[in-house]
Each structure stands twice: as structure tokens, then as C-alpha cells.
Picture (cartoon, one colour):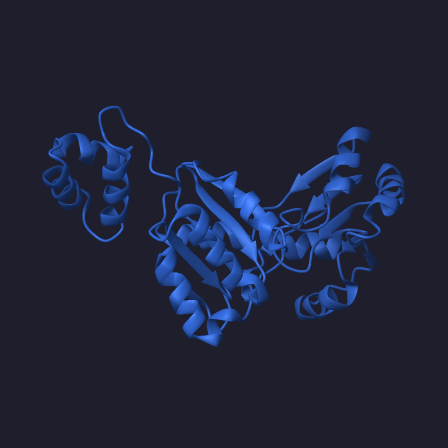
Length: 277
């Protein structure tokens, strides 16, 4: 597979399991003129494993703006470049935005390759609604700023996806309980594609209790997902929708609708349609 001159390729790399790189990605990495890597030492091991000998340039969050002009000059002269991050898809909570933005402004062709992304992999197996989701990256490190950021999403009905550091996971779960309430559904995907891959799911208070009780659940790379706020539906109280969401996570939709209808004196058919919306 040959590369197109003057093209920047966005190449995802594995988030853990080295078998998750695509054949196309390997061919692109072998055939470009330069690989722009977030950490050349980290990526060197992967490239050696893949048999890739292409030279690398270091492009990370602290130097990417100053390196962008030089990379664009190379691209405009006919060189092909692959952009990779330490793991996953570049630009998704990783460096690369200034370079890609500058390439677009300069009329340089940018070609994305599909591949590994922790947020999407976690969401696909979480059991939370996927029709609407919001990826919000990392929450602020300081507690008050974290609470403020979460409060902005308090009434968002989309599934929320965050990346979180192990040292902050307990504080973040406590903030979720405080802002969203103890019953909001939460899923933590930890160490995706690696030996100790784990999914924890339950109410916010239950997941907080599980993580607090097991130090092993406070280690590794984490994707934190939070169910969206109950959707408001005309004639259906918010409390009924919240109970419906909780029961639907554990029971078949028709059974959950029947229980809530009986409890709130509502029509089960209307509630069932709401679970499908």
C-alpha cells in the first residue's frame, strides 16, 4: 500500500492489546516518510513489534504548535506523515489538534484511519444508552472545579463519558453522587483490552462502595460513564421516569414499564414506548 504525497494520516494505535492495530495502519506506518509520535520512546516499542522502521519525530502537547509549521512545510513539499499518540486515536484527549487545524487551514489533505478508541470501546460494552452520548474527556483535578463541571451536565439526557485518573476516581465518584444523586447509573471500564479488564456497573453509590472496598479497582486506565438524566415526557412524572430507567437496566422493558405503571397509576404502554425512545 503506497501513501499519497502531501498527506497527513491520523493513525490509531492499540490501547492495550497489540493485536488491535489494523492492517491498514501497519502499512501506512511502514510507508509514510515520517511518523509524528507523542512519545518516541513509548512508540518505539510498538513500531519495533510491528517491524516498522520509519523515522519518528517527537510531537507532543508542549511542542506541537511550534512543530506544526515545520510539519506542514514537509507535507507541502510532498512528504507523507502519520500522526500517532501513545495509545488510541490521536486528538481524542491526546495531542494533535493544533497540527490538524493548521493542516486544514493550509489546504493539506488529512486522512483519518478508524481504530482503537477507549471511549467508544467502553461505551459499546457498558449497557448504557448509545443513541446519544457526550464525550467530555478528563474532569478538572480540583474538587470544586470538578463539581462545577459535573453540574453543567446535571440535566443532560445523553450518556456521559469521561476519562479519569486512578488517584482521583474515588473523589470523582463522590462528586457524581453529590451532583447526580446516589441512584444515577454508572459504569467504569478499567484496563480495556488488557489482562485485568474490568467493568463495574450499578448506581453511583454502589459503584463508589465497590471501588472504595477494592484497591485493585483504583488502578489502571479508566473510562467512567454516567447515564443521562431521565428524559421528560408529557404527563409522566420525573420520579416515574427515574424509576423506569433504574428498573430497565435490570429487567425487560415491558416488565419494568408494568411495575412503574402500577406504582404511579400510569399507562404501561406509554411507559414501554418511552423505554424504546
